[in-house]
Amino acid sequence: MMKHLTVDSQFETLIFYFQSQLISIIVHPVGHALAAGSVNGIIYVLETSTGALVAQLPICKIAIVCLAYSPDGNLLAAGGQDGTMYLLPVFEKGFAYEKVSVLKVILMLSLIHISE
Image (cartoon, rainbow, N blue to C red):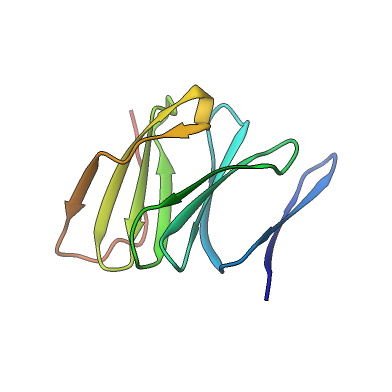
């Protein structure tokens, strides 16, 4: 069964279809890319104006429950359901990612806020 995400704006509605349930979402600060975390540990990156799937990032085997970009958009933090945080450098205005750091914390992550 396909899952979908509908994004409404003042000008148009975009509908994105996925094979997995999405539970976290964020738009890159530049606004051209949208990242969505799924229950199966994959982050999907979409081009916001067309809905094209740009990247599919298999981060882990558990749900990605929260996502946050740094204010400059050069880092994406992804929180796993088990309390693990993944830090991914971001390139090309939100369209290229690299998995680099994994941080294991004791407390469950429910919200990530990156500030300057």
